[in-house]
Length: 314
Length: 310
Image (tube, rainbow over all chains, first blue to last red; front, side, top):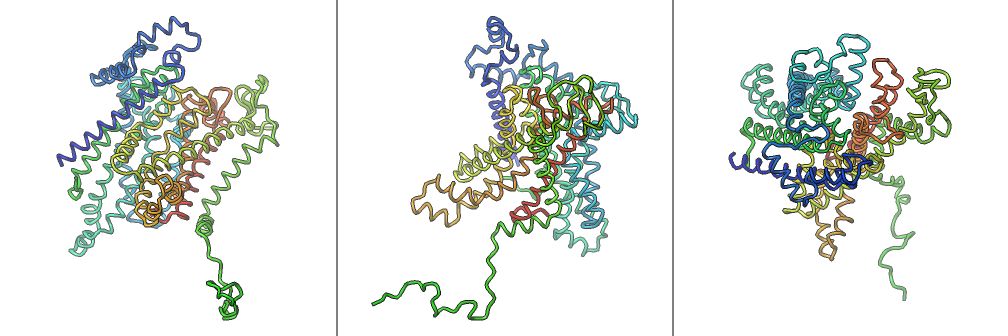
């Protein structure tokens, strides 16, 4: 186990290293240079020279990378020269809302998807199963932004169930206005439940064919007991991996949802920064989300191993 | 003296034909393609999906030959008209005809979606075949690199590419292709691992075939099935990725627009209830994505016994 932990952690570090090289490289191999991108086509050579020097872009590329990495390891994501604010600060202002959105969506998804998957597995190949399968296929294939806009159209514009006015710009405003979070979370949950319940269904079906099920029935356990004490507990284990695997998609979905519902989170910050050519911010948030997803899948893998004693680690 | 032929010539009377034995003429053995096609056609949803795609291709590329809507000039007298005579899908905030715009935007969406989907397939296939064939530490490094790239949420990578590289069609094709080949690479690598230990590969090597020849002549043709199945899914993802970028305002430079951009413009008028500016492009994107997914599933059932769904 210890060996596995160490190896898996080293792997994550290597992953992050490659991510940092790729993102940094892409930014600094820009055809017209970062500074021209930031200042626009009408910038004078003096202005360009000044900003280039200020950002340390006249140094050798490896020195730049080294400085950037060193700052990154000290928790310094750089300074946005367009907003005149440190990226750390910007992240601090936005991270809470995003984490709240994603966390709530993930929690609700698991609460919904597990019973749906169990229901489908126990009623395999019935009308119920087929109906849910069709619905989940649609939920899975329809893009997040389309679901979000439809939900807004129906519940905010047509039915007026939820007021449109407020913008969510801080964690307290997200937490204090639960009605404003219903549609954003709902939008994410629809797509996620569709995927998760499929996974849950097939995990349940896998477990139902195992020998221990027959043994339990032979020893006189009730159907209910077999299902909930034996099968469900084993079928839940792969869900840990699924959470890890779906993190990148989830973060991407959250970005769109933030744009649709005007939630000032990490995603909207990234979108706005990209529109303004504020590359320092985009670089910072990209690295940060990569870090979160890599850590997430690391935790998921480790908990998978810890939960299932049958998993042998080498 | 006449040499007896090593092989009996056609019409050799000593060999009885099926006819002489009273047998019905043998059915021509059905090719794998033929059998696959039969399974595919049985899947009604997939046939409908093909129909939808064909409709959209005709609509976008041949529609403009028959329907001449105003897609270029600002007409202040005709802004935000609901669907009606003269404008079957209404007009937008500049008085531009929505139906004509749908065709033009659809061309761009399909062009970028299909091209980048195909490009991603080629990249994924080659990368996977090389990694799997070479093996060893090079394979390990190549696959770890994929893991790393997959841990960046695709949207972030796309935002990154489109922001740093400009917003032209070529950039979008490349950016989307470069972020959507990972899953195919894993599949192809898996295939390659089983193919490279086959006897015919060993035979080829023994006869002096070089690595390049083995990859091109033996490995790639044997993994092409996986690639074809995956391509329709990759195209669906490409259309989605492009729509997302346009939706968040990082799409093509104006005046060029795709369905995602039209959908974004329309949904910014959600409160005014200009539904004709929102739903035609939105539903078109959804239909294309769902159709490609159905076709991919059906192709998998038809040609890939190994990957058949449960």
